[in-house]
Image (tube, rainbow, N blue to C red; front, side, top):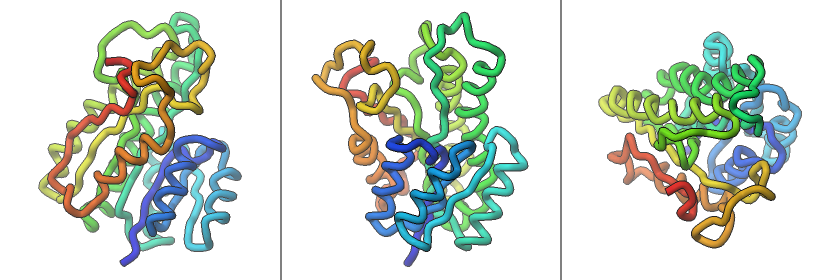
Length: 236
């Protein structure tokens, strides 16, 4: 039986979204790949994985775009089983120096995009008793000062509240929602300034996939509202 997965933020070459696309395709999922600006990357990725996969452009900070995306998936695939909210734009700018545009991008690409995408896809996910995965940040649960990209981190912290809210309301519909939060990955921005990781290495996209995959299995339908930190001890 086919299963359909939507990955948001799949427009960055070598990014987590593109890596998860390969992982899901290799386990038999048909993919709907979302990108906001770099749709050519998502289209090339979908084409390379096979003709059954699709690419979709949307500004998920806009409810109308999110609703249109959900409708396109319904038209193209007829169902949706997994939503991975991976979109998010990190800008390494001092928190007191963000322009209004940079501030807005940090918020809109994280919490706004996840909220509207989740809400738009719920009718399809309820039909399939599907799974929602939020890609967070290992410091999302720590209310502490942030030197860089303040609005991005506010958005990632907001994902925790979103996750708890939808996990509770959607449990009766058989939809689970969990959050997987990377630490510093080997493809992250500003690796040259990263402090030492307790585990002795940066994380990898495979580390994130290994945390996500069990949450998609049929026998983990009772796991919802969980926050899984995959950081090698960083930010603990």
